[in-house]
Image (tube, rainbow, N blue to C red; front, side):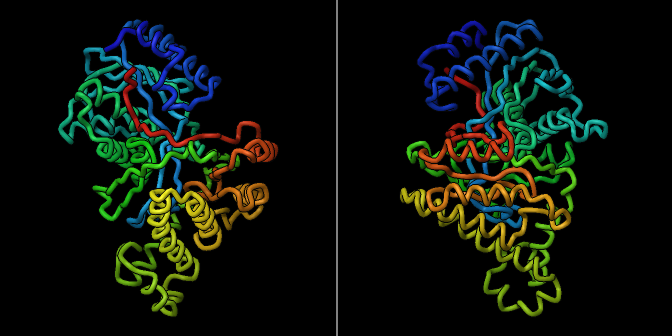
Amino acid sequence: MAELNYLLDRINDGDNKLFRSLYGEDLLELKMQADNYTNLITRFKSTFGKDDAELFSSPGRTEIGGNHTDHNMGRVLAGSVSLDNIAVASRNNSDIIRVESSGYPSFEVDVTDTAPKEDERFQSASLVRGIVAGLKKAGYSCGGFDVSIEGRVPKGSGLSSSASFEVLIGAIINALFNGSKLDPVQNAIIGQYAENNYFGKPCGLMDQTACAVGGLIAIDFKDPGSPLVKKIDFDFTSTGYSLVITDTGDDHADLHNDYASLPAEMKSVAEALGAKVLREVTLKDIIRALPELRAKTGDRAILRAYHYQGDNLRVEDQVKALEKGDFESFLRMVTESGYSSFMYNQNIYSPRMIERQSVALSLALSEMILKVKGAWRVHGGGFAGTIQAFVPGELLDEYLYNMQQVFGKDSCHNLFIRKEGAMKLQF
């Protein structure tokens, strides 16, 4: 454990290399981050009355390639972003985890009681309890600790605030009780286990993996229980482009059936061809069976299967382009993926609410402003929520101004891909 005064001195050091790797080189941003950590440490000390603790950070994530491919055992290109959740935590020599988080009610979890609680479903306490259960099941130690959390990955932003929280808790327990022996991918798997079985949301594994591992990664879900994760050595900050996520403001609350239709329809095509998921069939298989498939699954399912086949292969090509330093080809494929989502996957707006097309409008504005100089695509699940754009420096101010004029002054997040996943800060 480190003394809080020592941590405060390191945070406010004018030459904080760790902070620059997490948050970039902008001096105003670095000062703001130092203030955020300072305020959180002060809050932790006031809440729990302790002078020793550790600092933690867990990034949000962005999906860069492979839209709706993971649930059919496909490939995804994802990255951890500079917008993160941070925590101050310290062992309390008990069996009770005490969580204090800005904007949320405080709660406690007894690490000796790992049974799911019906009254905790869809609450943060269920995630903490599920992570403890998953870690114990995997043979790791857990004990009581006190933690103050500042959640800076906005809920509903498409940047996976829940996955970031899950692997943050995993990283804390890993550092405080297990000598940091837990592998990042296993941390992600345990986070998914908690969300599926305790929180009550049947999510995939992409979000947790990107947040836990960090950097730019290609994930292959051919074996969903043990995904193949490959780090891509590419420095986005050297390109002169900004990664901008725009929240269009539409609500996801009434879109459950739209989201559920995507994996269901894709799998219906696979099942009609004698397989379980689309990873097990080829585009040629689909084309040969088109007349029969139209009768069995309908045309939209076939178009979504076509999108899957294209985006799954496109991830491989995007990785090759980045590894060769061919950023121009990479950008072209980002936009190709976006067009495929719009035309074939059809997850840009709900067919039940055609008057609400904010994602489509944001993509149209992006195309008008960026033309051939950048790239744009739907981000994440679709139908509502966020889009992603790679914006060249000379167009950044114009892009941000126009998007914020339409979607609100806080709608745009100007981010970069950070190399570190969920971690204990070591100065």
